[in-house]
Image (tube, rainbow, N blue to C red; front, side, top):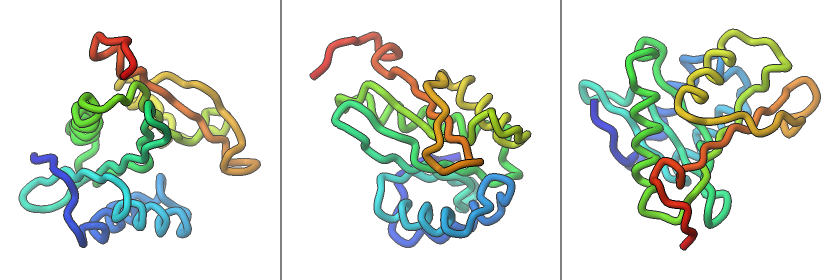
Amino acid sequence: MLIRSMTGGEGAACEQIMRLLPKWFGIEEAIVEYAKATETMETYVAESSDAVVGFITLNRRSPVSAEIHVMAVRGEFHGRGVGRALVEYIEVALASRPVEYLQVKTLGPSLPNAEYEHTRGFYQHMGFQPLEENELWGKGMPCLIMVKHLACRRGSFTRT
């Protein structure tokens, strides 16, 4: 498996991956927005046998924080380390920047959902901690913000 920066035109492959995961990406407007974001934001893809099997898109939120805007891995590659490799890759990419915090938003636990329970477990296993659950996405769609302090991982607490 190879992880690399996305090249122009590969947004369609990212969109296709999301469409193959309706239990996570079931809202058409969100799929369209995420697909556009892959073309305009910093995006990395995981490639296996010359095919894109996963991707991760970053959004800089402030000089010291970034957000995993969207990440998806083809279903047949779940549990094979692709998601872990994508997150670790962006952490290395962010190490040379003054980014101290990495965040991700996901469906909150107050709305029971087996798929998103798995998603939250994945992020916790990657070192993210739940910060807050709110109504950012509206009533009935609880948003859980999870954060990871990257400076701790690097052993540096100095701001630049």
